Structures are given as structure tokens and as C-alpha cells.
Length: 169
Ligand SMILES: NC(=O)c1ccc[n+]([C@@H]2O[C@H](COP(=O)([O-])OP(=O)(O)OC[C@H]3O[C@@H](n4cnc5c(N)ncnc54)[C@H](OP(=O)(O)O)[C@@H]3O)[C@@H](O)[C@H]2O)c1
Image (cartoon, rainbow, N blue to C red):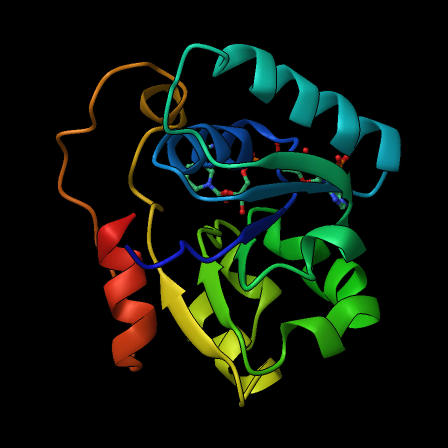
């Protein structure tokens, strides 16, 4: 069996990111929950460990700051798009050449260049990375529930490896 890639969740303390962490950790992915605050990241990781204590196949779970999370193999961006450059510029070197999973919804369309999606924005910022956009239309409530998600999701990527990962999660 191939080892699952580790997944760092920038903003993993939030509703959506924590729900993603639950699902992925339950599926056996090693997870690092990131936050602007080390203690908040650790606290959320401990909550997740407690939540999944009866899940036999769960992946390893840890937490800390966003810099720690950005050292994983795959990076999930689950932060408000308005904070993306402030949060990501200092850890930009850790995102290069990696798969970046974009779950951000650009509700205020004037935040990016006219017509740009979050996918376009990330492609420009991280030309060597492999971007996949997904989990944008899956309700946070569903991600946080114990139920199996039976819902259509839109998965977008130009890169076959990133697309495959997006489809699998
Ligand atoms: N909620 C939904 O229903 C839903 C559905 C689909 C997609 N999304 C997208 O998923 C992403 C996360 O959504 P969410 O509802 O989980 O968001 P959130 O709870 O507002 O924020 C997620 C995390 O980002 C950090 N953060 C929050 N505000 C920030 C700020 N002003 N500056 C810097 N960091 C900040 C916080 O982590 P720390 O304080 O620990 O650093 C927070 O826990 C968003 O881009 C959203 O558009 C959300």
C-alpha cells in the first residue's frame, strides 16, 4: 500500500478547514492543523484526536502554526481569500512545487483582479505549484458530520496529479 501524503491545513482551526481535517484524518491522511496561533492549532489537533479516537484507520494528527502546516506534502488553503497574501507570503517558499488544494470562495469579487477566480490567483502566485480547486460547494455542516458525503462537487485542475487528489478527497 502506498503511504498517504501528509496534508497541512492553513486555517484548519476554522469551520470548513476543521471539517476537511476530520474527513481526511478519518481516511488515513496524516494531518497538520495550522493557525496564526500555535496554541490554537495544537488545541484543535487535540480536539480532532479526541473526536476520532474510535476511528481505527485515522492518520497521524498534529497542530501548530501555519508555517508548520505548510511543511506538509500537500497544502489546503482554508482561510478567507482577503487574508491570503498576508498569511501566505511569509511561507510562500513552502508552497512552491507542491499540490495546493484551494477551497476558498471569493465572495467579494473585487478582492482579486477583475475576472480572476481564486484558482487564477493561486496559479499566478505559485506558478510551480499544482493547484486544485474543490470542496467549495460542499456544506461545512456536512463536512463536520459523521455522515458519508453524497454530493456532487466541482473539482478543477490543469494538473493530473492534483486533479486525482482533488477527486479522491
Ligand atoms: N464556511 C463555509 O460554509 C464554506 C464553504 C465552502 C468554502 N468555504 C471557504 O473556506 C475557507 C474557510 O472558511 P471558514 O468558514 O472555515 O472561515 P473562517 O472560519 O472565517 O476562517 C478560517 C480560519 O482562517 C483564519 N482566519 C480567519 N479570519 C482571518 C483573518 N481576517 N485573517 C487571517 N486569518 C484569518 C482563522 O484561523 P486562525 O485564527 O486559527 O489563524 C480561521 O479559523 C474560506 O475561504 C471560505 O470561503 C467556506
